[in-house]
Image (cartoon, rainbow, N blue to C red; front, side, top):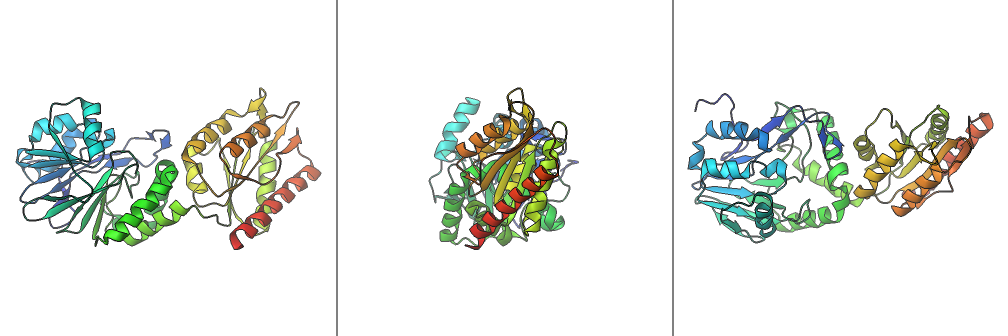
Length: 402
């Protein structure tokens, strides 16, 4: 229909009409180094239906893709699965442009749309399990509160076996490819894990409830149409299985050592601890906060069994980069981790003690008192660090193997 931007067909009656954000690099403190997409979907039923919108500055891209399939004013229904602004940012403008016969959301979604946009439109609230008649097919709502907002719901198109999962099973990844099987599987899986670790991890109990609910509904799913990243059409079973694993947070024989260092002394300690862990067969990730972002730390912690944090003491406090990652991590609530602190210090040495207090506040399982070395560690001190790593390894092996 004359548009340079085209919709992408994802099933017999469903088109992707979203937007690609190639340049975004920060999403609520989460480092999105590979960009993202804002996925919206057009259902070509008797009652033509649009599911979700996009971030406000991508409105024209959405309308262009819709226009490549149908005149936007021929859309009958609009459905908001999730009210967060990256999916509803141009709600009012889109409603004005398409003039839908009806607008639908969850009961909490109806309230959230009103609170966000103070709009004059009538919004109908869909009940859990309610089947919306689109004429030649049905769209069923499944309420999923706190996955990851109170308004959240998913919707299921019976005719095409498509589950519109909003932020569930999403990943921040901008690409010209629209489907998971068109991209390297490892990269897709890593970004999906990063998304879970940095957004959904504190809601793992809700994730388990939703997975159980979907299992009980026994919906055949040919397409898992998420709100961010590539659409799942090949590895649907694998990503659902991974969500189950991540939600359980079972400890593994993996340790993550996160540290900051002023004059390389704490770094030397971290390296020796790492060597002690590795000598016992523990897969260990050494992460210097000068080189990695806090959101990259969380994706490694997601499938770990131990977390050790090193800090020098600066102005009677922990190092600022360490404070940053601890504050961020505390909100994401990782569980089932052995944890400890260490660091080099000059004359006061409170840094590792303050880290330990934060780890205790997170209700992690403390391995020992903070390991502290005065100034530059000598060979004897480094052997002490290595022995500390071996001790943590033994504790982790016992925990995992039972």
